[in-house]
Length: 529
Image (cartoon, rainbow, N blue to C red; front, side, top):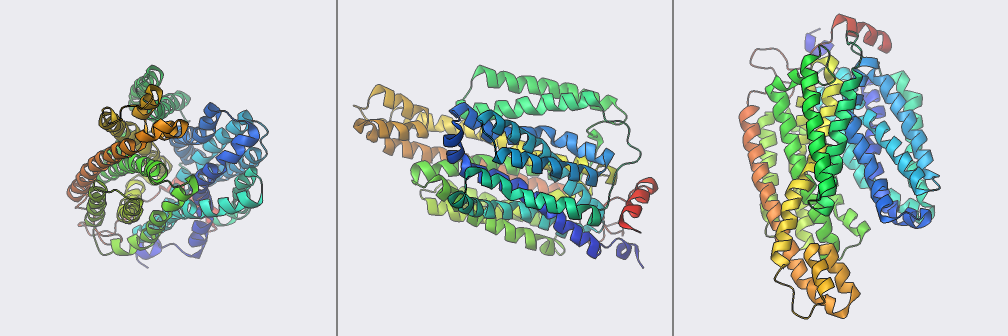
């Protein structure tokens, strides 16, 4: 038997992948059902506007903040162990959220869901790396893993809407509980345990510094995007960056750091991670402006706006399924860069868009074209990390998505807001009340509110719509340039990477690095070898 055949995954590994699909599905599912339930739970619990924001945002804040810590923790204590602990906490927090009796209780439950959610993605990615040593099989497994994210985004609004029509708002939080129970029941039987037996004790000051870096930056970026350049969010971002410098300095000094900075010396690893961050940055800003366009210009409801995104989610699900097949024949550099060119063309089309139909179709095509970067990029990130660092690498892949989206909303979104204010400043007709005019100059949402408050306010809608459409065109124009840059970067920096499953120029199959003997021993015992 050849080495390549010896590393092929069998039925047990594929059954394990089916189990790992459950938490992956629920992470994206949870976000979408909350948006649908928000009006009902707000009325029932009496949540004010500030509490509504925390109910919505606290999950993402803590998910992003704890990703790096949880990825590294799984490498040390065991990836299956961390996954099962996270699933237990996720289930308990879901029940707590469903039966919350106050906004504060729901915020606390959502915070616990975010921390538990941070254990799921790094653990599942790391286990996939360990279970699928063959590069071709691993690419296919990651394609299925990524497809579950988009499938959750598709089914979430539909199933959540049905539940909300038949039951109370808390029922949507209970949808994930049976899946977590199934994971806890079946996981120990089909998922092997992997851990780095040579890792030292986890460095607590590094954990504190990582949280002090990520949480203020994410909070500050979101607040800047929401309210503009205000002192408190800006101070939060600057403080987070300062803590980030201290964090990096500490990692360089430690013999067993929380984040191994040597990972970034690998050209494939750093290129894939940077490209994913940029794509997420562009996607976050574009989806923000598209969602506002659907509702405030196109007149769609919140649910209709969510449904307008479904063709894009469906096309991405299809692309996740076929990308590994195509990648077995075409080098990742050409497949990813070709997809980025296609996505950039979609963004160019968006610069001329003046209808919801154009955005819906364009988003579907863009999602299809961007999927090779997400699927193959993730495979490159975790496949080029040492086996004992797979959890840490998986957490970085997820952080690039979480932080990239927030960063895009803050940077490109801020530029778009500035364009809107510049375009509408002198376009408001005479005779509009000063208060309504000021609200319209601030944002499109303010213009819509002003239009409904006074008869004279209706006059601001047309110029506000035109100004916002112009801002959308600028945002997507910037996105087109960035995605074209990603295409050039990938084509240049990854041209040495062969098609998935084929041999490298040195003659050896490209696969994940082998585990040490000390690591293999407990792993083999876990799977009964």
